[in-house]
Image (cartoon, rainbow, N blue to C red; front, side, top):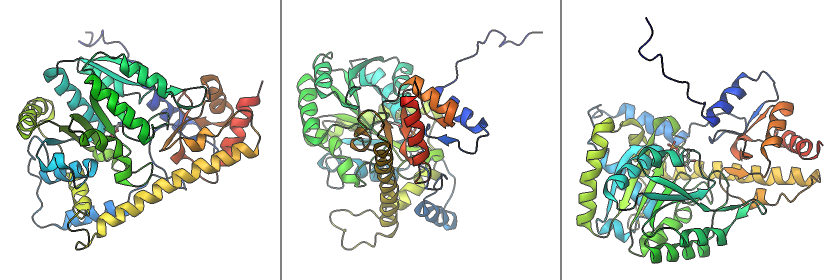
Length: 415
Ligand code: PLP
């Protein structure tokens, strides 16, 4: 007889995966994938950090190692180190025990658990997110039953920030609403507010009682300083107010498939923070019971040596230092790709102002190419990217930049 699932309809493909499949199936030797947001080496290869390899060897050789279940909230030491990474080693909120941090399945899991917590325990069930934003952002909140609205963010005429529009929309948001903010290296635009603008955003949000939820997927990927890139979050924590953060190690340690991240909730008092944590456990328990240990152990081994205010001179920071060196190398390569691409576009005297390529930051650039031009690049040049014109700069190399620039030249001038 018929399957009991006979009436299941086919769901649409998820765009970023569809681009990946189309790229894989393209036999052209010139094909270029600038679609999915993962780091690539100058040779176009995935990168396993040396420090990660080293941490894994240590873990394998550790005699006391086992595969026992972790607590519902995950690896305790990992949680402490993750909070320090984002809020700073000298964070008074951490010292006052006002922060609860739970180990989650990467940035995505942290966002989803955070959204579930807010849906159950927060009075406002509306979240505002930037227009545009990371394609999966709305899903985390819609799935939790939270209404998604947007604030203006990107100005297509300048390929920069629409700061006035952003302030107007946040100013008009319903009081108490949740606001999703990207800490740095905004996906997909590459456009971040500067610190003076962040300060104005902070003042306005605190005035209106809006609740900040920071997505931190690229800490260190903009300036290669973990502290400098975390500054927007730390400004909001320094004022004594509350916020949530979703930290991801996918990009910054190249741990994509290990699914390592942490949700932190900064509260007014230690007592509130501990009650919040007790409720987070009730949310996690029926979903996956407890998180996997391997990736978090790698991160812990690397961060364990991280400098703290007191021990900075005394501690031998071998693994942490190695990570910073490798993080800097990734960031520098991306920045260099921006400059090389800009130079190549400039050399070809392609119509239009391309200065946004070097003004934007982080791994992505919203190039300003439209869907029709993107389709042209794919059809004629086998160059793959999302239809909004976002490119992953880490997908480029000195060898492929001229090819992309020629293709953009053709796309912009072809009729
Ligand atoms: N947030 C942003 C802005 C991202 O770009 C991504 C991944 O591309 C994520 C969150 C989620 O990544 P992960 O779940 O691997 O941490």
